[in-house]
Length: 484
Image (cartoon, rainbow, N blue to C red; front, top):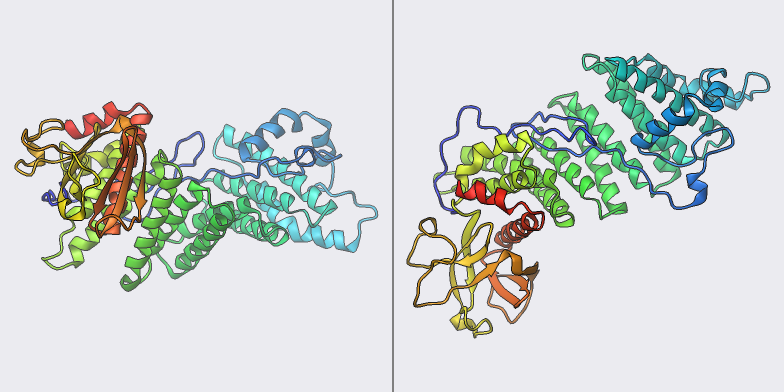
């Protein structure tokens, strides 16, 4: 339960660094003490017209692609088609030709030679990387050609920035300078794309990822701090343009988490609390977003470690450790084969109020009269596991019983997870003082009251996660975690 003693950590008691799934997310590691999960999937604007879906007369794309689409489209049609031959025989950057070129065009070519030289200098670390880079080089020529014809085309700048960013991922890991230069050029293209189209959400999102990658190369320096702040500003802008983006909120939280490791100690607490709110917002948008769930667990774990080191003897970090364990356990239940979550769970499992996922206090009405007057409501202990939420028998310790085996002389509130329809905060003036919680079930709503709004957030997340795990058919995994 929440006041259980925390086991002494081993010398290397750090949650392991996360890595994205190979299919969509490039592997990343964090510099700070706790591991993170990062979603760096390149974003693209959905097709919304036949014009955007079409290719120009010379084979230059007039809409932004994801890199998977881009590489597939170029590999299937570009390398073998006449479009590539025509561009390859040009002046190196897909220009219209030497004769009749205007002074403005020459200046344009000179201005973008740096970016093309950087792309052409990337060879890849293996045959697959070299093949991929040839496709990226060809793509870059296409987008330069598109910009030459229409310098006000934000999509061309956006796609070119994606090519530069993907080329940076293709650089030899030992060559940081070349990677940083490619990312810097990508940032310039994103800046131009957003200047031409200030509502281009995808550009802000991927721009922030590029800046964050540059910041990671600089460790915990003042320059890295400034870059993290820039990345955070761009995630903020991306979320303003598209509030329904759990990926942007998750990455925003990670940026704040990284920044908190650099700033002075007096600023760290407020930044960490903001990071927690971003991860929580991401989860509220997508309840099974295991990356954000895990990341919220790691940031709470770090906060618990800080509290243990800096707080006085009267302040206990046990509640933070228990909260951290809830999110790590939920991430593992949703993604049981993921080794990062499995390793982290081994560290934090003992911090759970076993055999429950969560235990704490809520003010509740009598089980047989849910609309009773306030004077009949009582603050009592509740426990949550894979089966549901139950009011604990006050005469027994939660760790000594299981759901369904409570006192015989009194009815206790019990909500089976299968009966839950929705869970939400409730600001109802008819409830007793505190933070209202409404659990709507197939049998009707149940109202409870948490001690604080912060406590309510923990209950909301825990109940939603248990339901999500149940809906995904993973309740047996969660049961194995908490029952051993």
